[in-house]
Image (cartoon, rainbow, N blue to C red; front, side, top):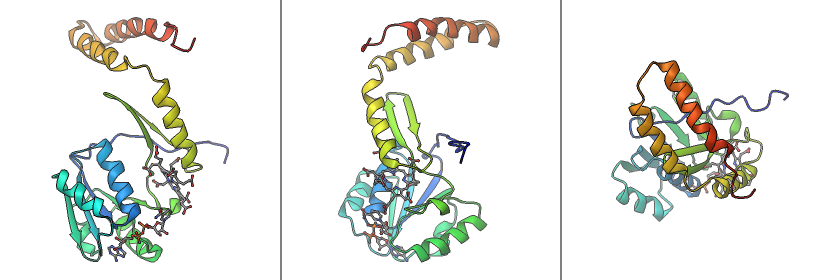
Length: 199
Ligand SMILES: C[C@@]1(CC(=O)O)c2cc3[nH]c(cc4nc(cc5[nH]c(cc(n2)[C@H]1CCC(=O)O)[C@@](C)(CC(=O)O)[C@@H]5CCC(=O)O)C(CC(=O)O)=C4CCC(=O)O)c(CCC(=O)O)c3CC(=O)O
Ligand SMILES: NC(=O)C1=CN([C@@H]2O[C@H](COP(=O)(O)OP(=O)(O)OC[C@H]3O[C@@H](n4cnc5c(N)ncnc54)[C@H](O)[C@@H]3O)[C@@H](O)[C@H]2O)C=CC1
């Protein structure tokens, strides 16, 4: 494919949306951890025939917005959900549920099955309020992970201070939109030109 990565990145407010995770094994736990690490107040329902990973119960007790249901998936679990992550050990079940979610226009991620996914999870670099999401277009999650580690090292520690200052200034700046854009660009120009620590 010559177009490179055409996926559209966005940042979801999971404390406002409702997420369903199906599956309570290793993969279900991994997805739950990825969600909570980013969005501790995410509204998550996890349904699994058997919650195999004890850590899932521990997380549910630590995060009040996580609800566990220990039984087989039922169609009604999809009611009032915005996003779905399928993480069971049954590809057939995933295909069946994906048909239901597509009909309802529910965005769905299917573990280990990129073809069935409406969206992928990304690697995430966070420094305070700054967050960078990384995708390799599904080609190599390992490269994505390594790129996260690289950026975690490379990002300057003072980026939060800069963000706080800019937020404050942004609130204080008087003038029309055009003037504000110009001013904010001027102020940040210096920061880009500042020699970085490795120079
Ligand atoms: C398409 C995608 C869909 C999705 O899962 O959303 C997907 C799919 C698959 N992953 C597989 C394997 C691995 N996944 C990881 C790790 C991560 N995988 C993540 C995302 C994604 N994985 C989406 C695309 C992301 C992109 O575009 O780059 C990350 C970024 C986010 C997260 O999951 O939270 C997280 C890193 C977080 C971090 O550390 O920063 C590792 C490495 C490791 O664990 O060390 C391995 C083993 C090594 C390897 O295979 O590279 C397999 C084969 C399974 C098998 O062989 O059976 C498939 C299926 C397939 O490709 O067919
Ligand atoms: N464990 C791993 O490291 C990896 C696993 N995979 C694949 O990912 C898939 C999931 O793996 P694991 O999480 O390790 O499997 P697992 O066997 O640990 O967990 C599967 C979970 O799905 C639940 N489940 C099964 N049928 C259900 C139903 N009808 N309704 C609700 N819940 C149901 C089970 O109760 C269990 O909680 C498998 O297909 C596996 O081959 C792929 C790569 C790595």
